[in-house]
Image (cartoon, rainbow, N blue to C red; front, side, top):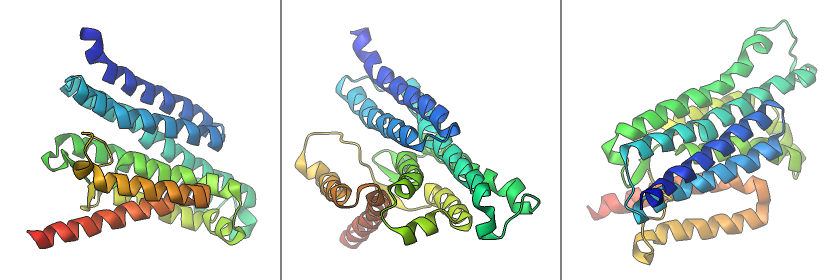
Length: 247
């Protein structure tokens, strides 16, 4: 019986292990492996809370472990990936009229870590915010991690040359870093994707979202990820509008 109550924590540790392995690959510039491991970690993060409820094993310890694991997988890893992408642009610095002696080359790559800082702040707020028990306020760290991690994957897929030029532009990457930090902590109510009960009425919004997300993934592969994140935000805003009108 005691072991059953530890199963959610074990799943959380699997999330953490995925984050640690992804971190190693991110530092080595192995973005494909890092992306796959982050996705696997987010998969475990999706289910640890569900099994905690099924086994009646919710605890303050589990909440803290979940946030600490998320901090690595969905906070540190995307920050490192952004840092690496901005650093690697040094090889193509002539395209952007940059030189090793400029202010940019010495400092700007570290701006990628604003994603990590904002993720840390977001997770800390989540743990003490009573408004986020059944929904989110601000973009969840796993969604934000997927948004950042999709950028090098889209570049490698090279489906659209014009898009690759945009995504490899250092100024665009800096802008995405600041946008990411803002969305993580913005006062925007977003519905939770975690399944709490096997009920259509209580999960229809999540089901609709997941179906549309699956269709987009089939049609656009990695490019679908930022589209899905945008759809998630828009769908949440529409839901909030409908609810506010009903009230």
